[in-house]
Image (cartoon, rainbow, N blue to C red):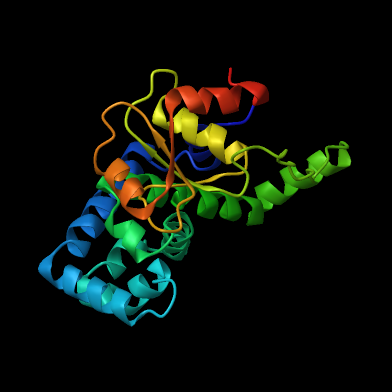
Length: 234
């Protein structure tokens, strides 16, 4: 059984208050959302998108205009390099700046949280004398220190960029996202011309309209279940 993020944080650094860290991450997400949609943010983002010949990189935009927008401090926690990790995760998750602008504050929070204190604390623990002793003890006891990379079998979702919209009867959003990612899909939060598929539940909202505008393929939950069943949807 794999440890949850909460268990990892508590085990590696009991001094860290996870609830406080989550509140900080949520605050950072809300602040980033508000600053991007402020009059200054809208002007800078539109200028950046218009000047970008190809992909309007989230990382490049935040690095270039972070000080002007006042977002730099949100990604520079004291004594850690987690800030840059958070920016990189935002850049990887959102296809481009347009996708980030279409994201809700909660979507941004979930990406920021992934790049939070866990990686830093794990690295600090492994570099400590106690961490090195534990790892060496495990090695001498015959514990394998490597793991074969998981091989994603070919599936209807492999290599596809997918957007989820609406409410589903058989899945909550996080469970469905995990299933799709395990099947080789990239799940993003907003529809663009680069989107391959939109999964449409009940009350889909504007994302369905965007899919129709861009000519993106859409599946209902019934069609989704047909494709998941051969792979094992339980």
